[in-house]
Length: 423
Image 1 (cartoon, rainbow, N blue to C red):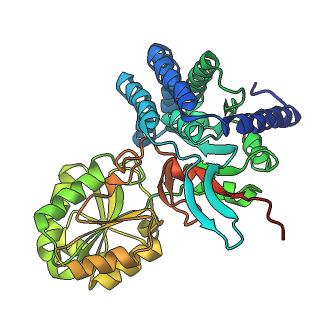
Image 2: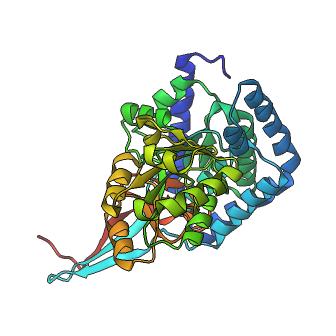
């Protein structure tokens, strides 16, 4: 199929769009039990297909090694039995979640007797464009389906075989339970022309959600005629205040940077107040260095930790996704906040302090989707927030922000009941 002409690709995508649109009208009328039956069967088929999934994933890993993918990217790409079981378990987690559709948001009874209800409804057909992590294929599909939305998926070329087998499992489960045709579809090519055309299919697709690197996000924003919710890079910060518990700061810094450095909620920049820097910088620096972290520091940090290398301007906005961190010494919490708001990506940022007023200032004025006081940024995750599997972490402000779960996959409409009123 990689040899298809542009015309053939466009015709195939239009067929996919038409199927998805038809499926959207059927899914919006389905009750919770029916949708949960689809998902339960999906979890079972994924578990039964572990060997097949691992075999296809090995093809992607071999290609990734040959193409020089980083260790962080290969880690994101890898599927073993434990991770596949986690994918199946995440599907069951979504089954256990409350259905977000048909919820009465508000009721307003007018003087003329009209009852105006604001009710949650599915968004419609959702297109998701993502890179590297094949578990997104399943997470995205089941969340969209639970919220009554068909989904058209387009994964990255590095995970094409893994994505294809996972989508095959989802479709097989759907056929077993009578799920509408077109509810889950994966674009089976890595041709970039498919993405460009998909982004113009506003007749069929109601929302685009991109998940990936900066280049992908910018391409989608520039080309799409469909509304976009961005899941942008994670340039996350940890600020160690002058009134921080140093032991706590060390443990949070270690966890937020080292526990899994290749994910978007790992910190990329550490900021330390000057009044605690002489004691904090060597301890935190040594702790991170022992974990294999490459430390890049401003001139003040380099004076306090000789093994650090000097940062440049580009480092402050860099999403390393590996064991590298930038470190800055500041004169005040206001300087720390200004730095975060200038160089951060609006993802997740944390402060360690025992000063309640400073904590409140930080939490109020750092303009990010998720802010933390005395906790690791690694908790910015749908499962950790009790949402089950997540669609991603939105760095937008409209229509969803932060971990995007089931409620964020709905919109609303007004349902008006009358007794013959006319205007």
